[in-house]
Length: 395
Image 1: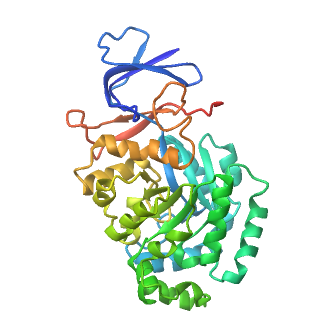
Image 2: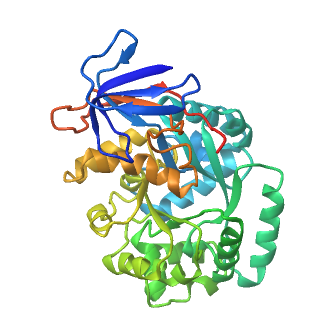
Image 3: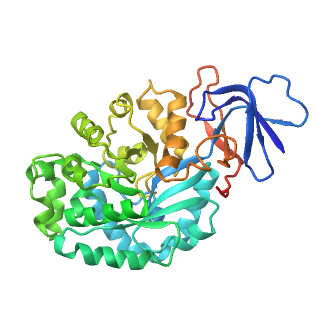
């Protein structure tokens, strides 16, 4: 039995505990939390800082780990995609070492589970060896309704020999309505979450509202079948919202240009949605951030992701939290930690053993050091240390 204590413990599922003790067995399974115990015995491991559950990275592209610093910042999504396609063609063989480094980086940064987007099997071997729990979203795209069934069938064949993997779609502008519908029905039937890039640029909305803008120009340049971009007169999200899973969780990723009307319609649709924010990637690509206060005020579930090394300088959920605190100063640390832990675990169906410090769970324990303990805020020098690794336990 281990006893671990700190000035502040954030169980996430319950209020913050001051000067408490976490009891856990030798396998890292939580046995309980004792509150307000000021008489720490010699058998108590005391750490100066804030203890949290292990972090959940709800959106990552491990395959793109070799692209660090190779795509110019602030050139917008259409330029990012153009450069990405060129780099992927030229650098695939050199990616394995970068993928391994990125996996180790995330583990060192206290990340215990990752929703990883994959277009190939390049990162599978690394993920299978990793101590991180991965759910791989095998991402497909195609704008021709007539080819949707074949695309999906091929994807199912691709993932059939792997575990902890499911098929998902890329984005509204790159997928036909038929393809989104087929994949959504599959997710509902199998109980898998669906992940989709959403409103990452204003050009995405312009494409669906009136058929104009840089995303429309990019698709024309690629000779993409135009059926998917016949203007609907609505935002991209409102156009595809009826097609998304009826029961399974939909991870809406980025949401940089989601409007109040978009959020209201999602609420009214009763869809099971989690809004995934990757603020450092948004600043890198678009130099713009989602309306986080809007989502928070409307009590929407929010999770955090890092995106890729092609659009970020590190893979750290703590750094994403720092960015949100800097730009949205009214956000409490309790709220940020919940977004970094439990909400992501719930979206990925991992909350039975991850996401909160509760008896019977083995979520891993992180220590945030160099925080402002007087005001319970992160500082520019805040960092994370892994105290206890996460463990998958039998439910």
